Length: 386
Image (cartoon, rainbow, N blue to C red; front, side, top):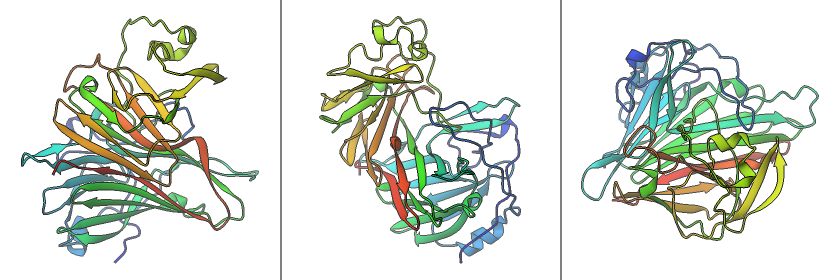
């Protein structure tokens, strides 16, 4: 039985109630969005009825999903398979805060990186994990305001704990604009996030944004991206949204890349462009020079600060962490761009900044849906360590 309106809008909670990656104390509270490279305007909260946890447990009993209150009016849906793979999804934000995967040595390892901070008004904010960061706009519409999906509600759950679990979410705020589904699937060795978008209007629809995954690592210096050789890239400012972790403080490091001397990015990434191979200046946007190039490394160490959008990368590549002795395969479908971010090797090992960010994106070239068209795209994280 599909569910339609069992969630209510969120309200502030105290940071003392939050523990990252804890099965019983994880929560999310929306906060004022920061300025981003592509605007992500807030969408008014849609009121829903209070969550009935007893009903959820009874309705979906035996499917491998349990539900718990996560503080305020947030709900935590925990998916668990018999082989030990687990994933935690928060509602109504749609943020995936945890993906624990079984390893070759018999234990389980958390693959996602999340962090808790205090908001402007003392609210708890969870960032990281796997998040959706999209902006939609109807093209050629005089009243075509851009908007972003924020409130997700549970629509249906399929599968079982033996093989795979699929959680389907819909976005109520989008109902009068587009058809929008978000499908999270946990398999024995894969966690996938997929969007399904339909445009019922007579005018084309434009989508810009990304699915971003924060992967926890021992340190970026011990982490390598394999399989991106010969891909073209464009250096872009780090993506920002309410879910994306802010770059760590880069200190007083001096850069020797002349192109960044007058750029606001120099304070965060002072050495960008200094060692770029086959790079050239193509133009500027917002007063910031844009550098493009070709990836020359097949075994790319992520010790340097970088924020790259690859335009012709393979459909999948591998991230290896020598410190934790594990790897993750990142794949995509539907999207044509791949994003890779590293805070650099100056972060402390196994610290709150020990992560990298990967994603599937439509930033350089938006995705356009014609009237009555349907588009599907997503990302998967595969665990090859079994």
